[in-house]
Amino acid sequence: MGKFGKKNKVSENIPTSALPDIIFMLLFFFMVTTVLRDQEILVEQKIPQATQLQKLQKKTLISYIFIGKPKNTALYGTEPRIQANDALMNTTEIVQWVNQERDKLPEADRGGITISMKVDKDVKMGPISDVQTELREADARRVLYASVGKVVKD
Amino acid sequence: MARKKNRMVQEVNAGSMADIAFLLLIFFLVTTTIASDKGILNVLPPKVDPNVPPPDIQKNERNIYTILVNANDDLLVEGEYRDNADGLDKDVKAFVLNFGAPDEEAAALYNSLPASLQAEAKRDPASSDNPKEAVVSIKTNRGTSYEKYLEVLDLVKKAYFDIYATRANLTTDEYRALSGKDDAEQALIDKGKEGIGMQISIAEPDKLGSN
Image (cartoon, rainbow over all chains, first blue to last red; front, side, top):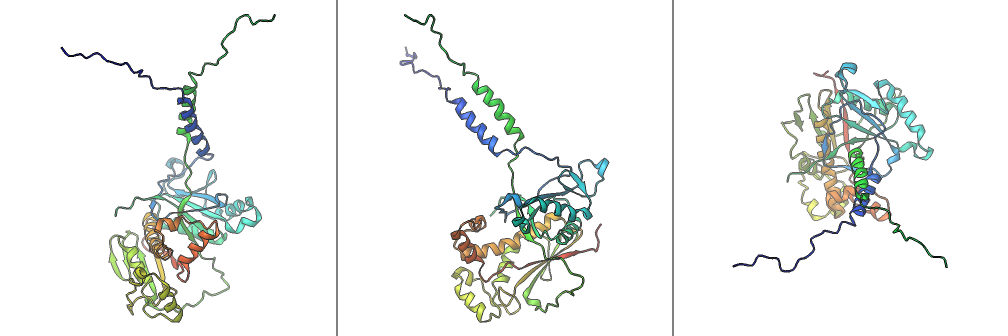
């Protein structure tokens, strides 16, 4: 007859008293890293991949411009559109927008304004070239092609 | 004698604390978008002044590495057709480090390079004279997809960053992560770049066959 009775009963309770602390730690992490989205993106954004990514040091210098097919095609059509701040705009308005953005910066930093172009993968070079021509016109020549990291195969 | 009559155990029930924290955690998990300000940095040329005619640049054909991308995302690299961009970084690297006809300054630069980069120099007279002269030109069409353009630009940048990183004795990723926020980092950046400028010319897209 085998004896299957447990000899010494170890208490099997996992101590859960530290659980709230752990959760709070996670919570604080996400609270700190979170950026509540303050603007609605009106255009499609499938950001392309690239390997040679660089990070910018001064985030305050960055202004974002979104280019892509409008999500609401019934209202805005299917051609790629440009969005800055909260609204879609025409190519001709870019110079004005850049100047507004530049005025928000402290005077010493105005030369270093960087435009982060968040462009959808499916956009062709035509509209992008038009935007870049306008950016040159506005003398905001530092451009960051926003992209996400690609896993290199080899 | 003052005596406490009934000693109640004064304790806040903390059992549901975890639940509350979980609830908050899930809220932030859902709303969070970890901001990524990463991308490929490019500096556009200054705007064209209509009163000043564009400078007439005499440059030898051999010093320009032309990459054309058409509306079908096909590539024409130095006159040769390619249907994908694989290996372009290696070719650009070989072009930049060719040292076909180095002048005195370039010879000094050559001697300062680490041996692994010196080995890249093929001294082909039909390719670039020296890294100072070498220019990579990317020309697209208005119908080229942005994805392809970025892929090509990415590979050209990779070629340069590879060279810089090897000179600074770092891996390419480490070199790109340098921010120049202190003198030591800035010195490393300068060490990589010295004498080899990232000369990438992005031509205005032509209008043929596009929308």
